[in-house]
Image (cartoon, rainbow, N blue to C red; front, side, top):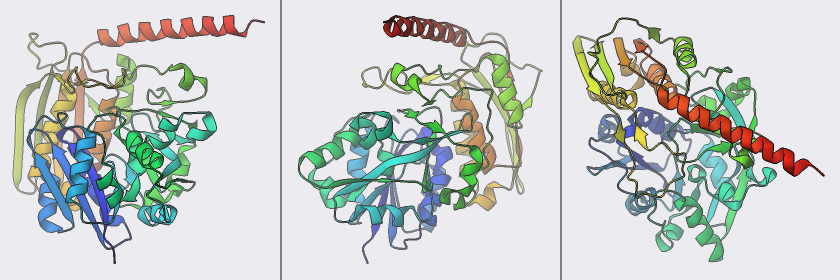
Length: 425
């Protein structure tokens, strides 16, 4: 029986998605399968490195280069070289795939060289906004239909003959376009039931455009069957910055991915994050600095961090061509939480039951913290470690939020004026 290879490029800023990636892989009903992960960054994934020792179907390779130095296209090609399966499926580490997903996609492949989804469901993990994406029905270009690599399934021989271009963005559309232009069959199928859930978690390279779906529909989807599928809360007081609806898509009128201080505090509170008022900052920190402290216990072991400062760092070189609205920096709070994840995943077996044994608190204190991706990161971590309490203190309104919102309101006003002029007879 043919082996089906699942490949995934990743970086060390995505380690909180690695347990999810493995469990989506392991849940697939097809037994002859393998998972190939190409990872870059300062440190290897504690979870995948240990899981590889337990499960011989996992091929995990970490390379100690800058997390974003190697392009996504290069990583996909390397994964295809290491894979042994005749059929390759893409998994994004932050997306959810139902146990029947591979069966569904292989049925759609038929005799073609590749197949991808023509419609799917997407969840804004920062706000709980659920939507259905149907590119062809809203007049989008082919790049929207063929350019989402999270649902690609293709024959490995085709990818070895026509590899992905070595670029960070758009490598997936270029790959399928090359196959199609060379006369190879490329099919598209619709996911009407919810075999995959694409996640907008605040740091994606591309956004989505769709129509809202009631959140209760999520629990009826096949994708909700995977182990430890997380609970989702809809925060309807926050507009999605990553899923546009109606004419906002064509006009590029998405609000910036930033929250005012009141909304951020409210969102954290609704997620169960405890607000704290006492301050340990010394007043000499940079505006983007975050103070991390924690006290955590796992069985008989105690882990303590009395206080450590994390500052913002650049994610992408300015020379890398990316969409203008892609977040180019990792915030201090993201780096702090990533550091905690490294510690937690390194000190226990790579199993969900072991994660649930952690207890204690993680505390963050920041002068400013407005980027909405913070909510998605805490959401995933709190699902993995349900007995760990999160605490956070944010001192003041972020000046970046104020300037970005001012610019956004000016764009909206200008576009409204332009539409009025166009609509006049």
